[in-house]
Image (cartoon, rainbow, N blue to C red; front, side, top):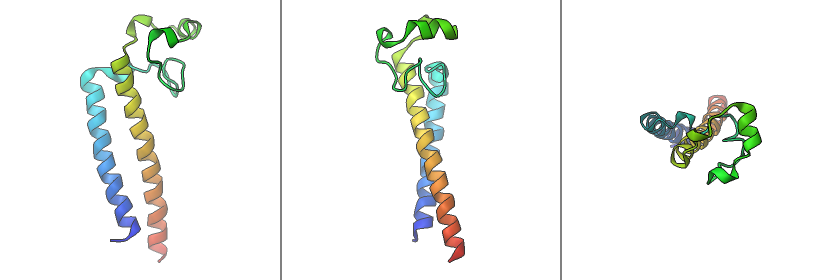
Length: 103
């Protein structure tokens, strides 16, 4: 099995995993666990408690602070991270497919 085939299989498996994580986000209602993009509650790394959230940012954006739920937030954030990894894998698969077709 060549590098292209290995990368393609890894991408397929990772995409199935992403679908599973996405369904977990949907089932738990964690889609708004991080209400903004690309940040999460105004932070690049999700806050572990409400005290770490910049209240001025929350008021400026009009978010309801009652919606802060660390479990939902981490569920959504992990979904985002898995999505980024899948994006890189898809790009790598594309590059390897071009190289494979040229050979």
